Amino acid sequence: MSVQTYPLPTIYPISVDFAVRVEGQNVPVTAFAPEPGGGVEYHYAHFSFDGTVTVEVSTRRRIEVASVSPLAFEIPVEVSENRLTFTLDQSRYLIVKIDGLAELVIAADPVEVDPPSVQGPRIFNVVEDFGADPTGTTLATGAIQGAIDAAYDAGGGVVHISAGVFSIGSVVLRSRVQLYLAGGSVLRATADPADYSTKFRHDSLDMDGTWLLSTEPGSVDIRVYGRGTIDGQGARMRKDSRYLNHLFVPVGTRGLRVDGVIGRDSGSWAFLPSRCSDVQITNYKGFQTQRQYENDVLDVNECQDVVVRHMIAICEDDPYSTKAWAEDANIALSWPHPRRPVERVLFEDVVAWTHCAAFKVGNGHYSRQHDITYRRGYVYNATRAIAIDPCYGSAPCTDLVYEDIDIESLDHERGNQSWLLIHTRERGLGIGPVSGVRIERITVRDAGRMPPLVAAGNADGALSNILLRDVVVEGTPLCTFAALGIPLTPHVEEPKVEYGAR
Image (cartoon, rainbow, N blue to C red; front, side):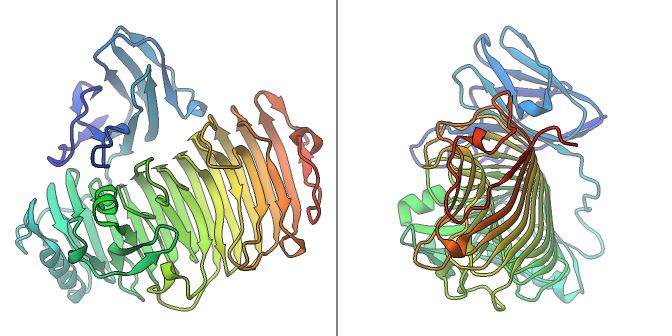
C-alpha cells in the first residue's frame, strides 16, 4: 500500500470546510471558486494510491446527513461526530455530500506507473534547462515551447514540468513529445487576451477565443500525463475580457495519449480532440464552473478510434459529447484536413455532474457518427442523462450503445428534463436519421420531472431500430413502450422494450 499526495498550488484557496486524510497523511483540499466574486462552487482533494486505504473526511461541525456518490459503488461509510470514513481498494472519483455544505470531490488516482526523472537523457526540464519561471510571475511560454521544440528536434523526449505555477500563452505540442506535469504543477493561462492569437469565434456567446494547448497538425505519438493541472482562468477571462479559451485542442493528431492530469476552468469547451485518430484518455479530471454556459468538458470532434476511460467531468454544459461540425463553422475554421466522421468511440467508467446533458451524441452532424458507446456511466446530477440529439447537419447516427448507466438525480432545468432524450431536430441546417440504438441495464433512481422524449423532427430524421433492455425506473422495471408514458410520433419506429428476456 502506498499513498502519494501533492502540494497545493499557491494560487488556489484551501478549503475551510473540509480536511482530508488518507492513511494518516494530510491531503490538501482545494476550494474551487474560479468566478470572480462567485464564491466556492465545490471542493476537491487529489491524491494517488495503490492497495487498500482508509479515507477520512472531517468538517467543522457534527455531521448529520452524508452520502458518497456514485451510489452504484455502494461504498460503506462510517460517521462519527464530525468525521466521515470509508475505504477504497481501487481508483475512484467520488462526490461526497455532507449536510448543507458544497460537495467535496475525492479524486483518488492510481499511483503513477512511470514518472520520469527530473534529469537524464532526453529529459528536457523547463526550469533547470530552459529557465522557466515556476512562480507564475513572468511568462514561461518561450521556455516551455523551446523545450518542446528541442525534444522534437531530438526525435522525441520528455518535457518535464515540475511543481510550481507556469504562466503561459499558447503552446503547441509536436510529434513524439511527452509533456509531463508533476503533481503540484500548473500550466496557467494569463487571462490577458493580448497574449494570444484568436483561433475561433463562439457564435452563441458572441466572443472570440484561443487554444491554450494544441498539437501540430499531422503530428503523431504525443503524450500528456502526470498529476498536474492545466488551468484556463476561463471564468475570469470570460467575465473581465469577454474572451474565451479551450484548454487543449489536439488537431489532426494520431496516437495521442492523455493520462492523469486535471483540466480546470476553461472559458469555453475545454478539451476538444478534433479530426484525430487513435486517441486514449485515462484518469482525467475535468473541473469547470457550473455558473457559465457553453463550457463542455470533453467534446470528441470528428475523431476515430477513441477510448475515454475512468474520468470525472463537472460543468454547467455537456460533460461528454461527440460532434461533427461543418467545415465553415467558426469553431472549426482552424482545424486541419477536410471534415471527417466520428467512429468507434468508447466512454467507459465516467462520472458526470452537470446542469445539462450527461452522456450525449450531438450536436453538430455534418458527417456520420457511428459506433459510439457509453459504458458504466454514472450521473450524479443533470437535466438529461442519456441524450441523442442530432441537429446542425443531415448525416446519420448509427449503432449507438448506452449500457450499465446509473442515474442518481435530475433536478436541473435546462429544458426537456428527463432521463432519456432521443430527438432529431430541424434548425434550418439539415436533419439526419438515427438507427441502431441499444440502451441496456439502466438504473434510473430519479426519472426527472418530465417524461422521456423520443421524437423525430421530420422524415429525414427518422428514428428506427431502438432497443431498451433491462431498464429500471424508480424501482419499476420497464416492460413496454407504453410504460414510458409518451406517444408514438410520426417517423419513429416503435422502440422494442425488453426486461429479463435473457
